[in-house]
Image (tube, rainbow, N blue to C red):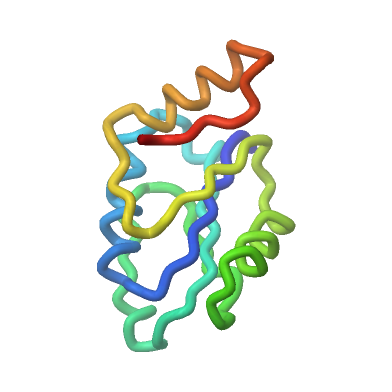
Length: 116
């Protein structure tokens, strides 16, 4: 697997927007991407999550919010060679994930790519 996308959320609205933007941000095959989530919201809001990305989405934990602890836990479960740590309020630009991966793969001096 190439890419693991890690996100912490408590808002189904924000998470749904972010998930929807992923399919526009990458052309990677479905088998090369996983989306792992630490859910901090209510069970009612969890039932309103709609993964329209086309990629495999899993809620791995339902714990109180602590960014470092939650993210480290997700990272331990990630299968991807590359980790994309993303906030749930981000709407990705077209091809942005593909461009970031290209930079990582084509330049051995690059170890971290961030957005603006």
